[in-house]
Image (cartoon, rainbow, N blue to C red; front, side, top):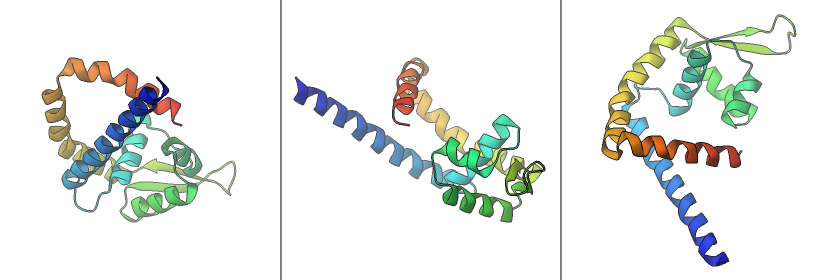
Amino acid sequence: MNEDRNTLAIMLFSEVLAADQMIRNRLSKVLPKGMEISHFSVLNHLAWRDVERSPAQLAEAFNVTRGAMTNTLNKLEWAGYVHIRPDWDDARRKMVAISPTGRTARDSALSAITPMIKQVVDELGEERVRSALPILRELRKQTT
């Protein structure tokens, strides 16, 4: 019985990892030139929440190191997609907000990926996608 459960767990993770790789490859091909998945993810996060966040908060939200997030934020700032300012309460910290140009870039990226995402949902069927979401969310929560 344990061997069957181990095989099931390995099969689940193999499928999730394979799907992740395929989705990343497809997204990379349709994102606007020069935009990486990490850039879109941060812009989408900032646009969705519409509040400033510290680099540390963003790193935690994306489960990456502060150094990795700083690298991404530097690229986004250079492109004019985010504004980074000192925290008025603690000058050692910084705060990040999406810029109007960043919002436009995020909207453009969203427009570029929407047809691909819609196609996947159409092919799988809306009901099957809805039924998979709770399982995927629980898997994400268990692996953090």
